[in-house]
Amino acid sequence: MKKEKIINWIKEHKKQLIIAGCVIGATILGIVIYNYNKESLVADQTNTDSDSLGNEEEELYDVPHITVIPKDIYDHLTGNRMTATQLGKQLLYSARIINERIVESGLAVKNALGEYDLTELGQGLGEKVYKETRYGWPFSNIEWDEIILTIIFTPEELAERRAYVAMIRKS
Image (tube, rainbow, N blue to C red; front, side):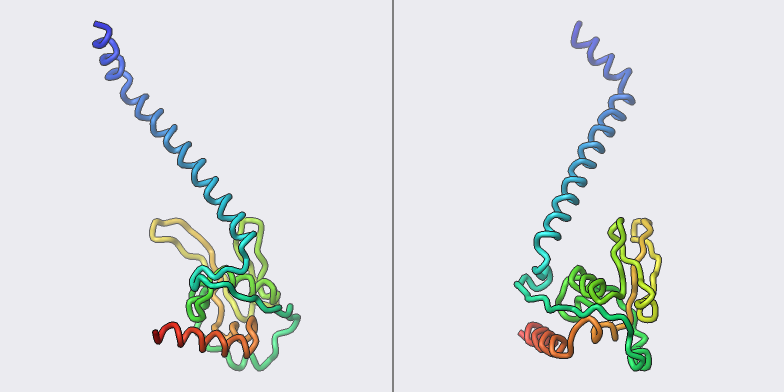
């Protein structure tokens, strides 16, 4: 008798129970995602020298903060626009390292939301683009002319890294 009352009550309140379960599940998922993002942010701040693509310890060189782009740079633009991720893949660096170099050079700044904005200096080399993920979520990104690598890395660094990449891809 008591069991039947419980079953009937559940049947009568099925919709409310499903909604409550969804709300609880979404809340738990939100907490997990929040904690994961918080841990990722802490890991990024404490592990700035690791290369997530090559899994190697790397020495980051001092990147000069430039105040003027040499005019000949604009004469040699490639027209090949790439994101930090795409630029990083060329050299087996993470997008984070490429973005750090770009910010340290004074070509972009990282805003409070974690996105990057072009500085006045970077506007001739980069373009802010707006896209959607395959799930329909909008986001912004900066696409840089490939020549930017010659600004954020010294010629020696580029030659050394390209030799390393060639060796890795050859094996």
